[in-house]
Image (cartoon, rainbow, N blue to C red; front, side, top):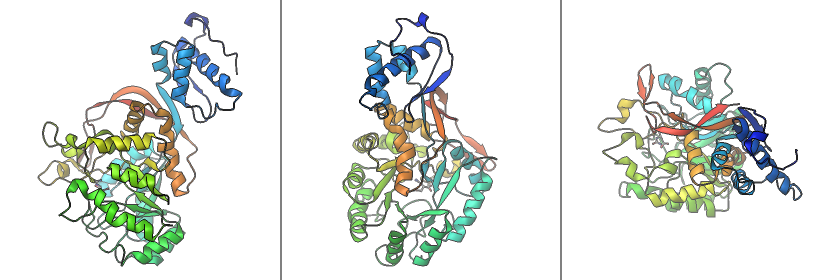
Length: 429
Ligand SMILES: NC(=O)N[C@@H](CC(=O)O)C(=O)O
């Protein structure tokens, strides 16, 4: 490590345009042009060495470090901003993804594969994936839909039904390709007509086997009783299904998928057993006003439906707090445009190509970019008991415009934030 004295002006530094430096495995890598690079490098190294004696530099938070460096060495705001322009993080995974099948699969799989190392693939096809044999065959179709030399790994799931048998869980575990079972209450969402009607009765032996096999239950957490207001269905589900479930089977690993409320945050944070939650970009960035802004907005419609602002804020606070119980799950759910823009449009937001950019935006706005990597790349595999990815990606702050749509052979898919400008872009290392 060089002497940590900064030079007084840019003219003292040699020019190393575009150089990327990585400091510690968890810290940002920085790309800067010419003197900005060197100025920032000296400033950062200075800050690191000042804490070296206390052996704290590995855990220093990048943003704090930059602020410290900025004040000690009087970095100009331009340099400070430039330093913040690029981060290198462990390759993220998507712990909640809808890849569909047929033509749609071919259109969307490359988008997820371009950004994520692995993904938990939801089983709500028609017919649903209810057996290990079907999951194995679906996995093969997914692999065929990927670009050549792509290392993306689909992690398969089974669709829980009242008639599933515990033997299926043993087969699933043995297969090495099925990683979880998804609970859709019947009628809760897209293709949930074959879902569960009797969780504590007919499904109980399967749940007990899952607890024994350490196979996570992924939960679409909404009651389907039409007497319950659509905005209260998650809260009602926690009270009437989730709490009794975790009391009855405290060993069962449960992931509350795509949480939307402060109630879900509280449940996940306060329960001591193996409970976690995935969080989508839309529930971090949008509230229910987005459904009606300037007219009905079908491309902001998903289930569970967007909630009021106070809930969004509670979720942002939870994920940016550094809690290990929350991790990335896009719930990217493509539907062909005509199935969204019609008199009875489908629920589902397509976010795969922009999700990482959106998560970075959320963490940046919360001043918590140093917590982004755990959310995108550590908490998920740790909860599932899988190794973290070894490869890295780089996220660079450089404005880009989200395409208006992604055409494919039988139509087009409109992504979330179509036509909008986003700040962060992802690059594979
Ligand atoms: N999120 C959605 O609104 N839709 C998902 C199903 C789901 O996860 O609810 C879909 O498959 O379209």
